[in-house]
Image 1 (cartoon, rainbow, N blue to C red):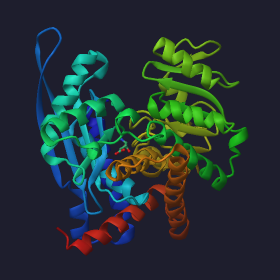
Image 2 (cartoon, rainbow, N blue to C red):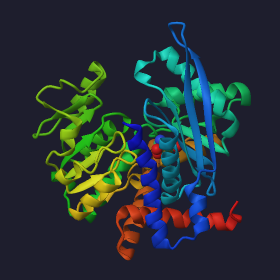
Image 3 (cartoon, protein in one colour):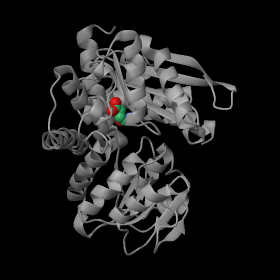
Image 4 (cartoon, rainbow, N blue to C red):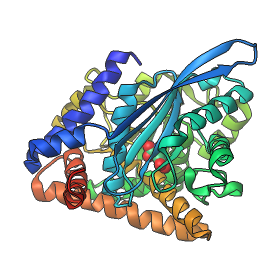
Length: 416
Ligand code: GLU
């Protein structure tokens, strides 16, 4: 994505904040405090590559607001990562943790790199180098990283291991770890599972029968593939999914279990039998009831929003709908369930992982899923009720609920 587009994403986040702040009549002081991050760290990461060449990568950790608890948020590895993107995503984490009411602030990290071009050994070096450079500003009661785009349980295992070298074995330093190494049951699929709990609520609210619904999902990474799996389990007919290389479409519906197996065997969904190829752009405009963007930001924009045929859009990705697209969808009466509630399932189970690590006691999967559902559905209902009561879009309501909760503790702490 062009860097101009990314700058707009950070500006968009501020604009969305301002809309809610205007509604709340938030003071200038409050706005200034909540629009600037608490701390921004940029680090240099020299890595000796497999071919002997020294490559210098750049990493970031940005802590937006920690009034409600330790900073919390993922780390992404992607070529388009830059400070503006990480800033926007860090702020979104502050709002996300407040809406679902878990005792964390918001942070985000990233390394500008293309993990697809790194060998497994290089990926390990990048992960450990990043941790060794940011370890001074994090800690189990200070800032707890987690996976995000292109990072996973293995990356968290490397990071935890690196942190332990200097600080001693510390399970609660990152979440989203492998279960064998202190990770929580249910964490890996938590974002997808949480998202589908919200889809069910939204379907009830907006008169869509999930069992006879048609859904389209953009992205087939951790979030997209789990959303597809759980949507199919709920009886929805998933007709199209995509990955970075493009999408596949069958109006009769895709067999998601077979597709997951095919993806694992072939490394991609491309060429899955009985499907036609669609581009990621075409996929967004396909006829369906439920459209779930679960990949990059900004994929629904001014040019394609008018062609969207879905009855509901659920933001499983962070910031997939641009601000102009949001307006267009509003004028078409298509509700958008915002990212800061729709994809909060991951951080909810990260919270459970952190609690289990600190207590040195593990919970079973049923308990985790039960607690996830309770928390995320409550967050959604708080936002939905607020939007109805105050005649606001779900997005402005979500920001307003979050800002109210954060500003309350900022005041209690004496603003500093
Ligand atoms: N990266 C995920 C998010 O954006 C999860 C963060 C976490 O678990 O801390 O919500």
